[in-house]
Length: 113
Image (cartoon, rainbow, N blue to C red):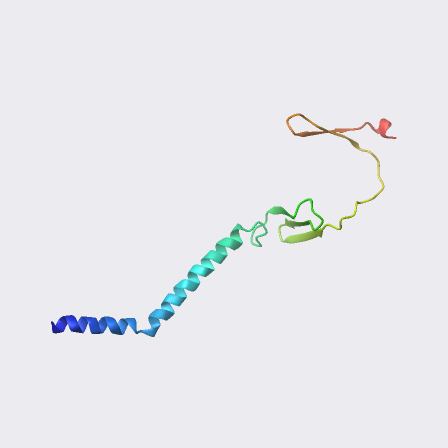
């Protein structure tokens, strides 16, 4: 019976050891870091990829934003709500087919002048 009592005293000493709580805290932080790393890698604007990505936020609304990432270069465009103007000429006609696809037909230069 005295052997059983000695084992329980040793177990109580292990439960009171402060280094065990530090080890558990380190394990917890490693898990949190791993989760954050996975979240960063799944983000389309991930800084570690060389891909070309376009992200549109609030499409079709007044506060629409478009972010374009081309390798390390990143550009952000914000909608002003104004209609653009400019000079130019008609370059062709676009038709929508029954299946939803578009066909662009360029105009002849003689007709455009």
